[in-house]
Length: 333
Ligand code: NDP
Image (cartoon, rainbow, N blue to C red; front, side):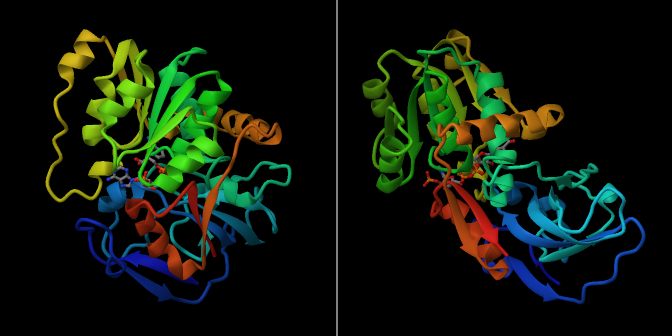
């Protein structure tokens, strides 16, 4: 069994030396325990934020798609594929009823529903947490109406690439911001965004004045910071903002103060809603089914950045902050 333990608290951009790979034998399961073998492991930006909950020497947290290789639990059988909070570990011996999420709540691994031939790795992406974040965050919080204009930041990432495509399915005009020209081209050519821009080389304000002279109605914010203020300043009265993430600030070593936009929020009567995807845990599988339907109807382009090899977990994680990924980053064990 190999697992990555957390060696030191992050300081700025995560480094390889923040993790240590340890090896130990796999023990036999006790009654009600299962042995799980990781097939695919997720790396997600939230790990940077919540790592402060992990004690030094503790296993790094996170979700994975794992195969049950032995079971002494009545709810699981050999061969089942599960999605669970099993951390950065190649194998786990756990009582599923006692598995906890990084927040400390019990989160029993769930058996992956039938994905109709779609890769089980998507259980960590479009058919899992990022997919539900995009679907519920956009539809429930931005409440888009056909013909409205949507802006999404982090547009070529796991969540953002789905938000924009769902926006197109719902009849919106979609404008995305991402960090390289290749990503911008992919968003416009393959994902059929109406417009996309490289936020590193254009002024967000000028780009929106040109691409959305009618004003922005819905804003799915993955990035935070100055870009958020710039987008909100281009919004229409009664605009809705789904405040999903603020990755621009996750590695900051001093507090990041975004330019003040309260006057805009007040005068334009914007609604900003922060959220975490577990808000929709009661309709989790409905979200997965909805996204699966979109895939089966060829309405979604699904892209994964698959990193081969469990030992590459830190590299995969760091790539989220250097912007090397397009789509969902998954490590294949
Ligand atoms: P992504 O796949 O989008 O990967 C992260 C991307 O963020 C990078 O590829 C990079 O793309 C961009 N990025 C990195 N640093 C910066 C920066 N300083 N400024 C602007 N962009 C940056 O990750 P996810 O789709 O998994 O997550 C996207 C956001 O959504 C994150 O903020 C995450 O925390 C949040 N999130 C929130 C959830 C919730 O429940 N609220 C659930 C899931 C995700 P680029 O090349 O464009 O810079």
